[in-house]
Amino acid sequence: MAGIYLHVPFCNSRCIYCGFCSTVSRNLRQKYIPALKREISERRDFFSSLYETDQRIKTLYIGGGTPSVLPPDTLQEAVSAIRETFKIAEEYEFTVEVNPDDIAEDYATSLRKMGVNRVSMGVQSFKDSHLKWMRRRHDSATAINAYNILRNSGFDNISLDLIFGFPLMTIKDWEENLEKIIDLNPEHISAYQMGIDPDTPLERMEKTGDFSLPSQEESEEMYTLLQKKLKEGGYIQYEVSNFCKPDRHSRHNSSYWNRTPYLGLGPGAHSFIGRHREWNTSDIATWCDSSTLQIREGETLSPEDVFNEILMLGLRTTDGVNLNTLRNCAPQSPVFLSDLLPKISAMESKGLITLTKDGTIKIPPERFFISDGIIRELFVC
Ligand code: SF4
Image (cartoon, rainbow, N blue to C red; front, top):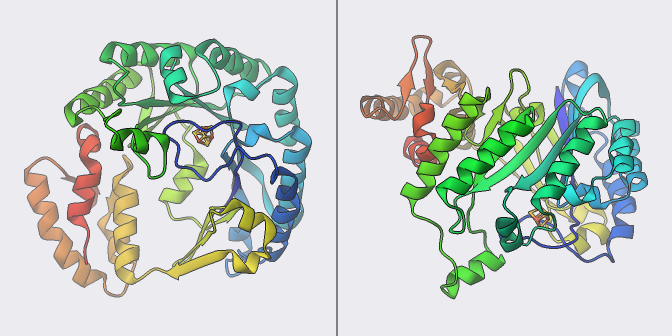
């Protein structure tokens, strides 16, 4: 089993908090498909080291940026190039990220015709004042309308994103946002705590004293409310930031956490296979203009890196990570485990980690808010 991620690095405007690889410049849009075709052709054998059946693409995810700023014909050209080159499984999850203000009936119909069976839409908040401050292009009514259009077009697997943890948002606002999203009843919800990424307007505002994040206590209160409300609404938490209706988890994102091989196409996209990671340049013009051989860097993960990565990715999920998986991941694992096991015991006694009878370690969901700190403490070196 394998996956493909395609990065579309274009947006019509930039949001205040966004550190993603994207540009509002329109000059490069016409260079995107030729450059993508070059990259696809060069990467056609990316999965060839896998067994034949494992080479089939089970998940295709088009993200950005804003894929929905591309006209359907252009998106279709990208998808066709991928389908012509890689072995696509008969049943596969095909997700496209969209912005609410790009969604009209004909656009939704085009996505359906393209074979898209899952849509992920960035709503972020149902409060217009929040959206305006974030410099999002849509308002709440547009988001709800777009959701209804997608639903009426036949999409039965819709994911909506929300953001919490910024000063404008009160706990009451957040509660209302959660009630609104539960009312809409999407199959999947991702909720992210706002952070300050480098080279963003938010970072500049922080430097001039015009912005600061709320206290950890305030953000934790919001996170706890998120877990409580979504549980009451029938959603299952399966990862720190991700919730879904039964069997509606994101297969693509889950494959990252399971370390399934994936190929990333487009500027800034990452790829992973075996113990090897690669990443394309985030310089969009360079990616569009260069022969792709010049645009990629990579690294082979050390045994410690593999061990720590399995630990980190597993502990962010509610499934946790089994000690046998860690034991078998590298020849040096017994040494790493002898470092890890005392830390697990110490954390277990503080209620930060649970160890099940079958040897699975998990972070209890009520501790997910501080999971980054817990995981850092457990890393072996
Ligand atoms: S639409 Fe998405 S990718 Fe584009 S600027 Fe906003 S957050 Fe970033």
